[in-house]
Amino acid sequence: MGILTVKSVSKSFGSAEVLKDVDFSVEEDEIFFVLGPSGCGKTTLLRIITGFLSPDRGKVLLSGRDITYMPPAKRNIGMVFQNYALWPHMNVRQNVGYGLEVKKLPSDLIKSKVEKVLEITKLGPSVDKFPPHLSGGQQQRVALARAIVAEPKVLLLDEPLSNLDAKLREEMRSEIRRIQRETRITMVYVTHDQKEAMSLGSRITVLDEGRIIQTGTPYELYTEPRNNFVASFLGDINIIDGRVASSAGETLDILTGEGRFSVAKSKEVAAGDRVKLAFRPENITFGGRMNQVRCRVSDIEYYGETFKVRVVGETGWQGELKAFSGDIQKMEKGSVISFCVKPENFIIFAE
Image (cartoon, rainbow, N blue to C red):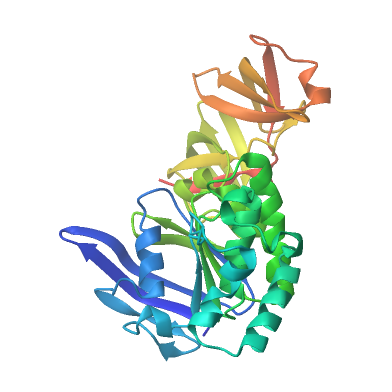
């Protein structure tokens, strides 16, 4: 059992079932992500873990202790809110130490704990500044410092980077990773941003319509998604409808409108089964003959070191490819190209 366990948790509001038998366990000293689209039940799950909501069924355990109906203040779970929730009339030092003062800890202990956390979060030069005079990244670090200084067993983060611009979000992802490594605090991070989850998460659980679809490492979820939803939510994916022509040994022969493909067997399917044949835009090569797809370039988007090439197959299938500068020189809108996918780079979804 991990440090935090959510066991068969369900929650309804009226006739709407928001969470349906949610199960997962968070290990000590990891960054665990709950990832899903808006409306999938993430916020409800977070409120149940913090104690602001009670589940209809199921339990929440912290270090093996049942805390399902324990008041929030007694759970020893920290929280970093999306809007930071800093006191505007308190400077950085006062914001960070406020929770410890409420607990009536000795002043010298408060001072030492605050100084240590200010050093970890690199807020030393800003201790006398007030929140309105801080950048978004600095405010985020203050919110982290205020939560960390209380030494919670688990720290929950509710989409903490959503208010920052793209460049600052990238910088803060690195900061959160560094702070977690230095403090070794277990983090549960709730977001709809797959880049945050993939770059920061030790493990990710994907939530959709109140149910957990798949849990695993970022690599496992990206390379072996359980279904089309997980594959699409964790990056771009191309999908071609097909039918299994034959299944022999470790190889499948799959017939599609775009041609016949030899595919490494990753799922148990039988001849005649209809399947979805999927592959990532970057898992292609230009040229070659095996598993070749002939298509027309409909658009090219420039992203610096890479290009996104939109293509249309001979039967009208539409897909996206990732190309580098050396490849793009041979293409232009309207040109006919061909690409290949290695058998092991296909993902199969049974219909």
